[in-house]
Length: 163
Image 1 (cartoon, rainbow, N blue to C red):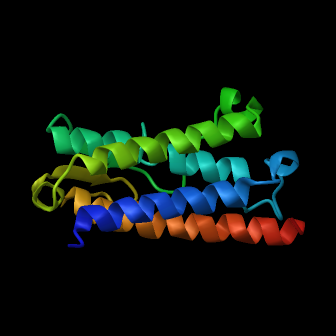
Image 2: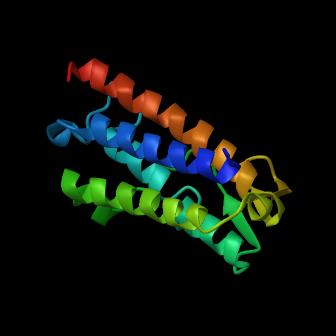
């Protein structure tokens, strides 16, 4: 029987595979941008790693365990800091894989009921509102749709570079 949990686990694995494939051969151009308004590969990855702050894996895990009741969501942050600006591709890969592995571990412990009933209060900073969210909602929106959009962005960066 296909469960929501299994669908999410497959999506996590698919996204991990896509991101790692897209990062292949991009070591030399982690910071390249096609223009001043665009993000580099490094910025895209760290945006995903820390949106929301501390990572989606920590948020979902905290929701499912009952330890997290609210979080802030601020869009369009690249989450760069001096340390991240200097790490090499192997560390970039480890950081994104850590989030995805943590997300997979958290989701694998849940059942569909928990995915649909655990809630947090999301403080949506850009819109100035607070909304209740379930893990199911976050996995469909903040993870699947949001991350897929940034995978498309990484794919476009690769194409622009001719990689």
